[in-house]
Picture (cartoon, rainbow, N blue to C red):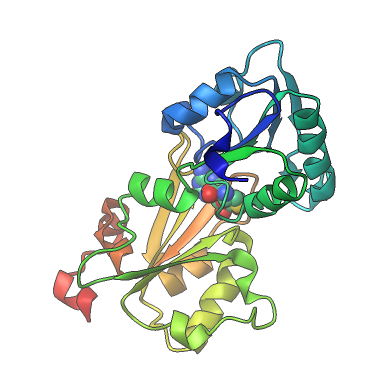
Length: 262
Ligand code: SAH
């Protein structure tokens, strides 16, 4: 069943939509279009009220969001909900924070729709890494500083997480940890144990791209010791030489580009 086979948002269709990192104006035009003609919207917890306000008043809404450590609806039930409404001939939007295919279980939802032979599409969203990088003035790649960018889940430090920590500790790359705020100290410890210099620039971006955004940019070891306790705000940890290009880091320390490239 090719993705293009059915007209978008025909009845009995599911659109897996990325809502971006928060603000309404970081939603894509396509995402907005899909929301406005939805008959059923199944959405996550991190979606802003102004985005939800675009859903037609008569549409059915399900908040299946997961608070930390508290699953309001098991993944299998989310799949069943999408399939049931699509089979009943409704236009279904599965609205997810950021990009649906980056740490969002969007892949599993696509597989469930494929298995049920329900027509679907996927609408990309601005992922937290891109949003936070841009809004905090941190290029995720930059010639001569970082030609590699790695997205990791914060629980990468569990056990060995199967990761090649020595490779992650090599210079010339940007590491972005999703869901990593609570584990920042352990992640930093592990990276430094594998040779990442303790003065590697690092940033914690809370509520990235939102009016409430907070950026803490410091050498990794300092950041790890100063990071505030985990709160309800979503946060991203970015580690690598390009963090030093950010005005937030520059306010903290002045580093020459030559020093950064080393
Ligand atoms: N699919 C989403 C990620 C879902 S995992 C995406 O592509 O962005 C949820 C994690 O994303 C949070 O724990 C946090 O690490 C990060 N996140 C989402 N929105 C954020 C924001 N506005 N600022 C900082 N981090 C954010």
